[in-house]
Image 1: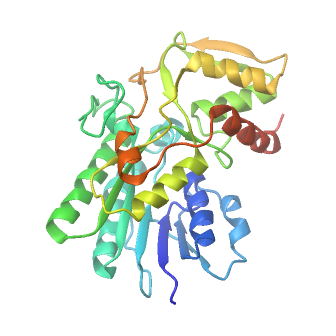
Image 2: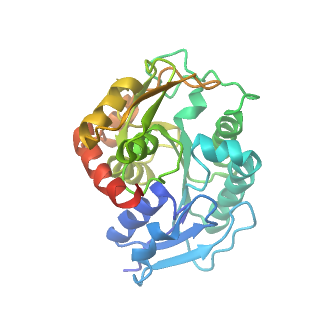
Length: 315
């Protein structure tokens, strides 16, 4: 039987590399695409020896050509951390707009099913808690985070347009905070920052009084959810994340307790502009439609992630 063939954009990134692992393990032929703007070949280097793995160094905001048949596309190319999209605002908007447009055009041409990666950031600083897929959000389009928020909101809108107008087979996932091995050390997000600071014996940067909440999903759980959603028959957005909520200050303390570096401490800083006060997914849809919910508790996931950061953080 001919193997299914899947294109993964952003495949050298944190989540994209784990998706490449998973689909190879599921006996797919994987075409990995990345321009390495924020991705790292180290994340997929172990796959180059696999006969069913190909890598294309390509920017998806340019026309995408993939020879041969294509069954599925996972569009995960995008800067995803505040440090990245504040430094690369135009590229962030372009990959959300031109990149998604090109991927949808390819899906239409090949008759492929496409799953696009959206984000909890489409909810902005939410006035509804926890966030359901029906909530439209509270987003500042001209604030510093607007380039990422609006890129992803446009991604969802054009995906639905292609679904409704061109009958393209589409899926939309809204990803909440995810963590695990292969996150970039200087990613700028809370978990890599805390691990790096704790390992180096620095102050863990807590913005405001640390009462803002986040929820953290281990990457293997997310990948399982993406796999199930891709193979489902549901085309509207689905939240994916871990609904177990924790304050940033409590989270900092968990990292300090795990790393046990006596030099590390809490370093309070002023709250950034438009920093969301609450973040927690309502995953009722994912449970009902996909039979999916997170399996890893935070203690397990943090231990596995700590083992990775110990190797890559230079003291």
